[in-house]
Image 1 (cartoon, rainbow, N blue to C red):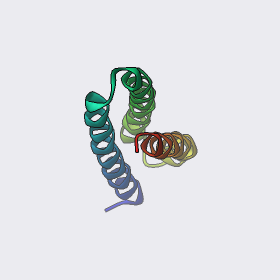
Image 2 (cartoon, rainbow, N blue to C red; image 1 turned 180 degrees about the vertical axis):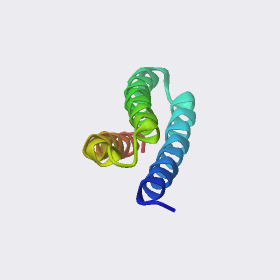
Image 3 (cartoon, rainbow, N blue to C red; image 1 turned 60 degrees about the horizontal axis):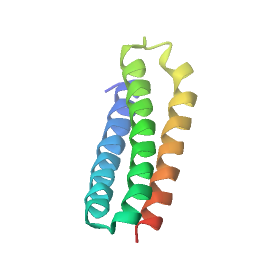
Length: 95
């Protein structure tokens, strides 16, 4: 397995895990009081936007050549870091 393939698998696994966590937050939001639901849904929408950007970055990586993918790595890492921090922040608010 190439370094690029290993990186792709790692990213996909992380995105899949975070997707599951966002789904759990959505389930909690569905059960929340009406006034809290709006805030929760806004946070979930923001998470889904960041998740979509991260998925787009992963798609760019998959289509990049073996030589060019390292140039994309910094942007991908930044997008994933942002999504991860936002998810942790949202999880702490949903408690």
